Amino acid sequence: MKDKELVFELMKNNNGVLESRQATEAGIDNKTLQRLNKSGEIERIEHGIYIDANYIKDEYLVTQYRCKKGIFSHETALFLHDLTDRTPFQLTLTIPTGYNTRLLKEKDKYKFFYIHKDLHEIGEMTLLSPHGNKIVVYNKERTLCDCIKKKDQLDTDLVIAAVKQYMKEPGADFAKLLEYAEIFNVRKLMRQYMEVLS
Image 1: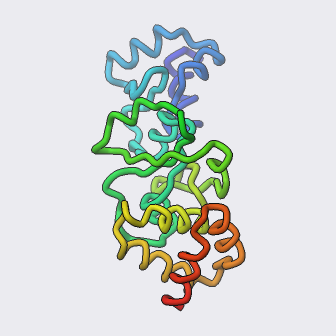
Image 2: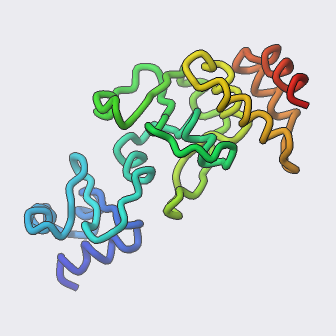
């Protein structure tokens, strides 16, 4: 198989994305990637990350590649969990304190929240993006705790509607919700929301 064919084969098996290190491991010369990028057949979206130019660009998947430690949270997680039908204006991610990503500069596209690294992975799970690709997002319970903790920076109606929606769901795990609320110091507030909305 020629290098070019192999590039597209690897991309096909990886949702249209290819990292340079994956190409190197497969024995593909970096010059091949540069040539395909120059001809417009693939697109370099970040240092060492390429996507198939003919593939539907999945912003969620691409963001995950560009910000490895970012976990989709807050409004974006509410949307991914169907706790709101409002498409996020910016993609919201939570990253560990001190972690640096070039995406921080792109304030119109992304919104970041920082959390201590010990709390960063609590409630992390894999979900399918609207394009059907696997992405990392916080579970519903963690997301609601995050939203209540940062309610002053979010749309209050959106947060209230999400809690209300969650409470109506057959799979709602109130014990887990309150356990997380304890960890993130919002238990009292969460109880108030639950009492008012029940």
